[in-house]
Length: 150
Image (cartoon, rainbow, N blue to C red):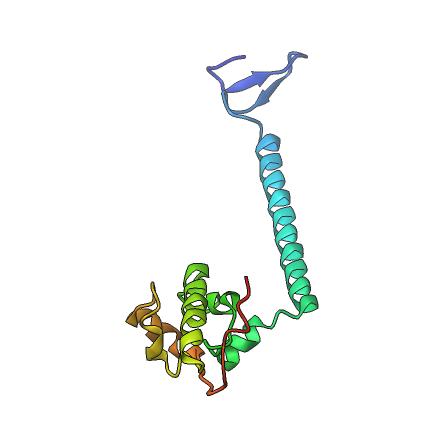
C-alpha cells in the first residue's frame, strides 16, 4: 500500500484509487440497505400486531369504550369499566366499587347521586372528580350491589 499517493494495491498488484483507512462504499451501502429492510420488517410487524389487537377487540365486542362514550353510572359500573376513565386506574376503580358495595348495604338505594358523592372514596379527590365528571351519568335505580366484577 502506497500511502503517499492514496492508492491501494490489491493482491494482484494493481493499484486502485481509494482512501486509506476507510471502508469501501459497498459495505456502507449494505448497512443502509440492511437498516432500511429491518425498518420495513419492524413496521410490518407493528401493523400486523395492531390489526390483530383491533380484530380481537372487535370480535370480543368489548363494550367498555361504548359505555364510556355514553357515560358510566358509578352505581352499576364494574371496577374494570371505571378504570378506563381518564385519570383512574385499577386501584381507584376497585376503591369506588368497594365503597359502593359497603354503603349500598346501609342505604338500600344508589350510593352516588352526583359526581360530588365520589369524594369520600379513598384516593378520589376533587381534581379526579372534575376530570371524570363528563364521563359519568347517574340513575335513580335501586340497589347497586349486583355488579362487582373481580
